[in-house]
Length: 628
Ligand code: COA
Ligand code: AMP
Image 1 (cartoon, protein in one colour):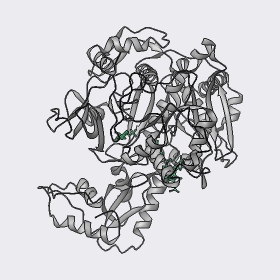
Image 2: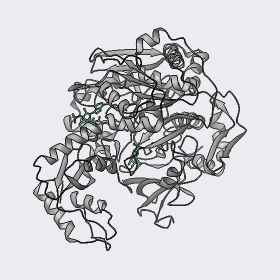
Image 3: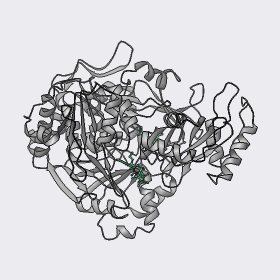
């Protein structure tokens, strides 16, 4: 069947399409209805069904006689560790972590916060939650105490699982101080904190609250999988919205399994038994979907790599891992490829490694600029697939579906909408724009299985953020165009979200932290184009009358790093006299970004005083920032 046939069938008869896909998994209770709806009209895929994601990802393969097959490969150049887990070994580990959580009183529906680096215990922690029907919420280790505290406050976890430290190439990052600070700010939520001690930085434990992971595990008994309703949450994953408060994306457990298994087969073309490597931290959607759940549901071996594309030890690290473990499918953010290309433009560090068995090289997380895509295409004979998705969707919305049909590549595009997704580019009134014309990218409702249909504690915010703008459609927050061949190009965000090294950040959240500095009257943060990271945040600071602090820029930079985390990469700011605003007082962030990035701009008709734009351009030129 062609991609067009799959796509048509998925939209015309979604219930048959997804029921067929769901039969590949084990269900404890069959569904009453493939597609139902809740009281608010939101879709309930596989209504009435119950299953267990951990069973389907692990125990099912062991029961089928594949227990000795590799499930997880851990490769950590920063600690000099290499370790493999078979499906049987990982199942045993997960069953005991689940027993440990049960002993701490965690049960179905309870939240567990996971703040850990990319180590096997973190994968085990996620799957252990799935095993007992608890809801995990993983927080990226690059976030500091403030971000951790806001997620604890919102998710209300009973137990927090952490490690004593993460390891960056140049430094050890102790996690416990951030945990302690966050727990002070959000007291009496977390009942127990379990710390996996790493020898690089052993953490002090607070008696009564903190527990040593190994001690707790030694006392733990393995527990079996429980039945989880298909529409109960598997996890909450916080992502940036337009305000400082992160959005808790809720993943429905049943549809998620179905969509991921379907994607592993039809988009990634991964066969069970192969090694599949999505190089992402578990703190991101890619880490959840394609480092943990997708490959395990499909019976692949997944790679967990604790290192960087460059510097651990060099720009050949990825190629070494691909060759060493016979990786057949690789997936990484374009920013990592740019980092490698910058250090090894001719690919000399590829030469010592046999990369000929790689079947496909996928990129996503940010727009892949055509020169980077072309560089990859020149270096690799396999398909290079830029594909597009977001935390909310949980799996690709547009891709070259290698398991169905391979389309010719057009660099700069994400090929075609995936079955299940009716993707349109629309104008301000929600009408389809002509081929090649830029519009807001939306998806017609109902969204397919796996997509988030609510936000934790905030269903109204979900509607306001995604559904209200274009009735009948989900608003992705991206803008782009579909060409005459049906290829989609995703060009930019339509909101105040920026993408820094594949990490999605809210400029509003950074502004909140900057504005709290005692000398700042107001500020704006916009995305500045960056050759390596795609974008970096640029701050425009207006000082309070009479403020003479010469160190204000260094102080706000340090403040953002300490409060939000180093990963925000906020290093560039300039002091300005005022911010350009509309007459109603709205800061013209879009126009500021255009000025900073040297793009053509027009002063909007609603501007309060157009001279403010010239002042910004002059200040940026003087500070030699951007291309004003
Ligand atoms: N814990 C603690 N600190 C972390 C961290 C973590 N898990 N991850 C990153 N940081 C820190 C880094 O040490 C760095 O600190 P510094 O300012 O002291 O140098 C800062 O956060 C920024 O990190 P990073 O974004 O990794 O930038 P970099 O300049 O160190 O490296 C790249 C650049 C391109 C190599 C890197 O960004 C990269 O590998 N990106 C891939 C991103 C990715 O996989 N995204 C997945 C989403 S699809
Ligand atoms: P996240 O939710 O962190 O995965 O970020 C999702 C956002 O990253 C999307 O809404 C896009 O703005 C951007 N993005 C992800 N993949 C691509 C891609 N292949 N091309 C262009 N933008 C992308």
